[in-house]
Image 1 (cartoon, rainbow, N blue to C red):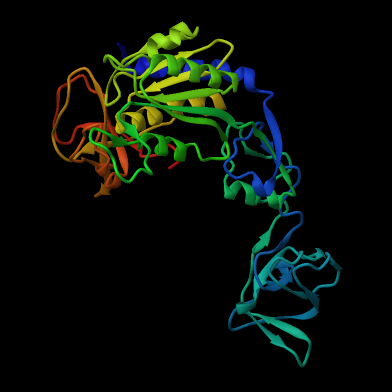
Image 2 (cartoon, rainbow, N blue to C red):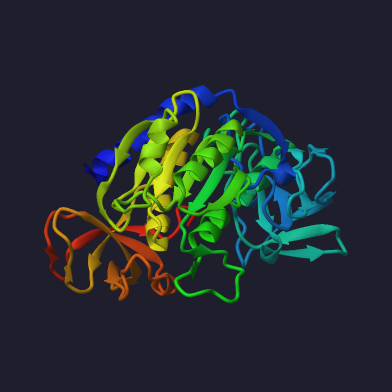
Length: 414
């Protein structure tokens, strides 16, 4: 049985190694459909934004030196030379004076080097001039060319998820397509002779509804995943191998199964995968829940994550093994947890890392973590109250109140 740290390292190493074979797996997608995809290349600005010096507010473009002596009691009068609105082409004015200017309008070329807000002025319509009641500094209230994005400025790295904020910036730069990685092809295989579909209303005695399948399917409902197969099987080794062969023909990148990885009579996945030519990297991790977790791969085929059948064990296996593998495969940095203090003492199995349903909040500037009641791997109701996972990786069997623990969001997407 591997430690969690060693098993996690194997998963990330295999993801990094396989990443090198996926560098050419990319496509260009229209900007409006790029959200949620993963960038295949570094993104850089093709131009400067703003493309020209423009006014940050409604007011008047002036030469700052002309207003050096302006005060509330001794206003400086300058002739009004013209008006510029947002969308106007830049204009040149060479005489001393003021140009009325609107927010976003190009600053007139020539001697103008500042914009003063309209609240600090008074228009003298009779004499076609403006009275200025305060001085101003060079460059004040001017948005300089390239002050938001300079030409060739890095915008986002390879492996970054396309967000609406990134799309907004790309749109301002005229990027109508983005280079993204091909979606990962995923197959789900749910096993368990006790499982019924979640849509079944009347369960016969001894049956339970499948909850792990809908959770995993929902977790995979993202643009960067392509769910190529989703099957439910009874616990039958021959049927399992036949279905596994069909799934392998679909050439998925990742196969995820639930159930049949413990030590019972019907736990056949390990032996079946070995018979199918898979290389077993590990089976059983020193963790709770999810200790029987399995990780295997075909060198010229997919990797296989065998998650335990209890639903919370499936959630933990997805959260702390499948997701880190996907991050490594995408070229993304490892997730970094926060650190919080336990709000109550907690007893745990010695030498096992425990991933516990928890609720965290900041109290007096410090992150406090409360372990919730109901930590059984079959108990889903605490997940509705939780907002995080508390990872207790101490060798100790008892943690005092105030002990430091690692804190992860419920979802890696958070």
